[in-house]
Amino acid sequence: GEFPEGTMLPMDVFRPGSRESINQAGYFEKDFLGMEVAVKDSKRYPEGWAYLSFRDRSGGLRESASAFPKERCYDCHAEHAATDNVFTQFYPVLQRGEIKPASDR
Image (cartoon, rainbow, N blue to C red; front, side):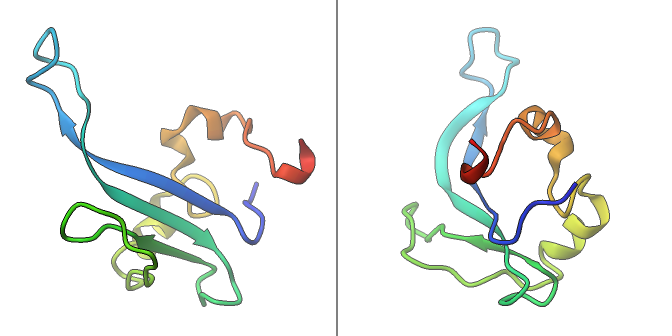
């Protein structure tokens, strides 16, 4: 399948933690680093998808963001993503198709 035009997939980005866990071996989300968003908009972006980071250097969030250059994100997504430039293979809820557009709920 494909994601509909206008899809926005936000992703919170965290520094991984491991040594602080009870068994010293598990991984968990530690420090919040920022937010990144994948946007499907073929009118604004020639490849159809763009990838943006709202992180600022101080650890906060910016009000707006510009798309990363094509070779920074798009090329890898195009080559390795399982579904329509999205790494659905790493998100079980997306693999099962449980996320529905608001109009279909």
